[in-house]
Length: 188
Image (cartoon, rainbow, N blue to C red; front, side, top):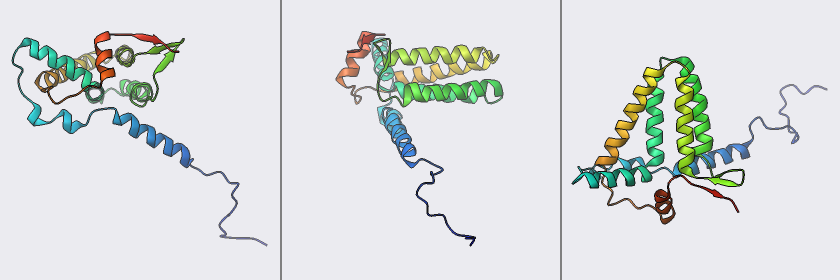
């Protein structure tokens, strides 16, 4: 006897999409993006104003770079992306690098450990930035990449100077690591 049009009811068939894996990925993406600062806080027009002097400008730059680090990384990556639209090879390399950025910087739950040493978040940012620039320069889009990096740096610098810091609060751990520089800690 044939069962044309019958819906299989076997529980042994594996689903096409693993719902649990998708749920975990969705949770990690939300948690990873939660570490960046809200864009409305970053672009709050009531918190914009010129600094009172050079020392105030340097203080703002230091505080804003620490506070909006992930947002600034996203801005620079977007500027680089738009500069590479007409260079398909560079765009493919950049897409692969963005995936690396997502997993090693944006969506990381735990610190990276390498040979019993815990790698600082700032070190990961610098290494990924240098790796991105070097690999993109190897794709012969040097003018576009340098222009995008300069544009991104100018945008970040302008924002970090103009954005007031009185309403920004770094947590105590972040404040202590900001003054310590590039460090790696042995994991216990």
